[in-house]
Amino acid sequence: MDLDKTIARYDGWVSRDHIGEPLPGAREFLQTLVDQGWYIIIFSARAEEAQDCEVIKKWVRDWFPFIPESQQVEVTNVKLREFECFVDDRAIPFYGDYHEALVYLNQYILDHPKLQEVIK
Image (cartoon, rainbow, N blue to C red; front, side, top):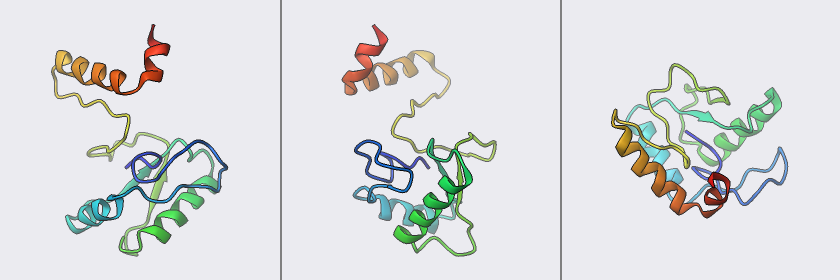
C-alpha cells in the first residue's frame, strides 16, 4: 500500500515528521482489507531511514487503530517479493498485453499534465 496520495493527503513536502491526514475512504478501504485477511505493508519513498519508518508506523497506528496489534506494521521503500498486489496512485496495470498497458499509460499522462512536459 502506497502512502502519499494513496492513503494520506499529500500537498507537497513539509518535513520528515509531517504526513497528511487520511484521504476520504482510506479508513474504510483499509478496514475492508483487514477484514478480508490482507496483511498490510506500507510502501513509501519516505522510508529512507529507520526513523522515517517509525514516523510512518506511528501515523498508521494513530489513524488506523483497527489494524490488529498482532499485525506488525511494516514499512519499506523496497519492492518486496512478498507483495501480492500493489495499491498506488502511480501504478499502471499490466495483464500481459503491452498495447493495453500503453492505453493505461497514455491515459495516466493525459490525467497528469506535468508529465506531458517531461515526456516531450
